[in-house]
Figure 1 (tube, rainbow, N blue to C red):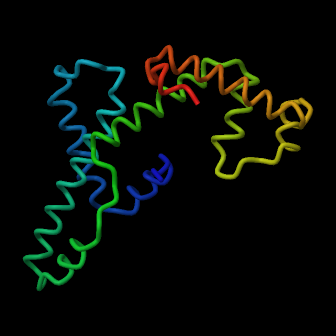
Figure 2 (cartoon, rainbow, N blue to C red):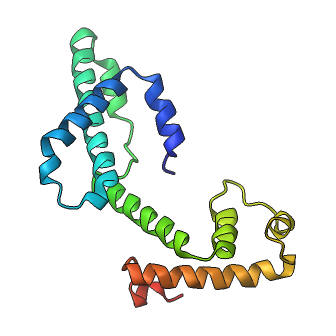
Amino acid sequence: MSQSDEELLRACRQGDAAADVFQEVFTTLLENVEKIEQPSRLHAWLVTTARRKTWLVIKRSRSTQSLAGDGDEEDEASSIPDEQLLPDEVLTKLEEQHVVRAGLAELDERCRGLLTMLFYSEEPPPYSEISAALGTPEGSIGPTRARCLKKLLGVLKKSGLFSEAEARP
């Protein structure tokens, strides 16, 4: 599962290398600001650049440690499988999440509230709580959810996230 912005910020606050990564990312941004062709994708560009700069800082750190130590730690670390997504996959996932959030924002307040409660909570609340929060009968939550998901799917199709074939059940 990907980390939330809060978790990433907490991790940055715990490490001295975060300042180095931050400086390198924003130096790169300033050096390339005229070359950025899609300003609307700046967030994704920053995330990708930060990931790449982080890898460089880690690589430099490992090189320094291997010169100082006997190399056993590096051998152990390199044997651990890397299950992280590749940068292109991360960028694609971030873009898709952005499109879904933007699509959700286009829905009416009732649908947006219902889908947010159901799908943006770590533990979805029971229907009784949703019913009380939205002022609707418990029995209507399931059918309303289906209608709201259908509306969201329509918005996502318009955005180009899904083709007709992918959107079919």
